[in-house]
Length: 220
Ligand SMILES: [Zn+2]
Image (cartoon, rainbow, N blue to C red; front, side):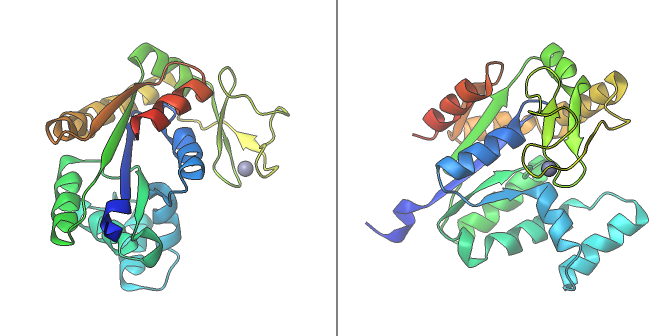
């Protein structure tokens, strides 16, 4: 058995409100996988005085979206670091078909492959309901929900004690737009990975624990 048989590269897909972030944290702990959340990575990288860091920061400073090719470069640089050599959990990347193809090309060249893609499926009406009651921690970014995942103490983050706030754009109109963007940009990845025979679809409508069990089972 060579080392490569022990690698585990996993992608988690899910619309805004599907619980992807929560499941990613649980899964990375349980499976001891490095958790690469693209949002966290963007935050880290743009504070670094490196070529890619300055490039990413320049788009943020202009208030522009970071283009696909820059995002891809940033993720591939991160994936080349030692802690990702035996696998990782990708959360928030790839977000477009172009990113998925670039990832496959880069991995192919290195003799690696994505072993599993888990898509957490939730009905649109349920997504809209969930997105409406969302609260975020201003310190660590953890998310809570008045119905499905309330904090132990109202208004306070369980994880770090930070203050919770509700984003002004967590309105129904904004939620619909976010879901439309996901349907247009990212949902095609589900079909793409299905044709590559690595897709597992999980029903994300239950309790956090039962969804977690289904996600873990999908990796076996
Ligand atoms: Zn917090």
